[in-house]
Image (cartoon, rainbow, N blue to C red; front, side):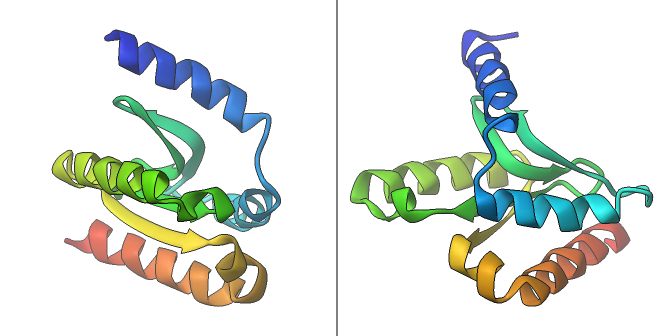
Length: 121
């Protein structure tokens, strides 16, 4: 395991204990469908990065962005991260906290539609 992967695994472990409110809300809903074969993992390391949620079988990453993602530096970092994940075969779905708080049903529909499309492909 490379050093960057070792660091992301350690960070993921820490982040699993410190989910944001929006991440907790979404996790509770994603976890309800865990009895199906398509499970999501929370704070899952992928290379040098940690995905908020990842469905391994469908290769989908779901990111929940809070207010810290609005700075110019954070936007560039997120773009680099998305490029890395997409080049590694992952589909990245990005929502903000407000989407989870106000439009949870729409967020879940988008996630499950993407999962269904990826699994059937």
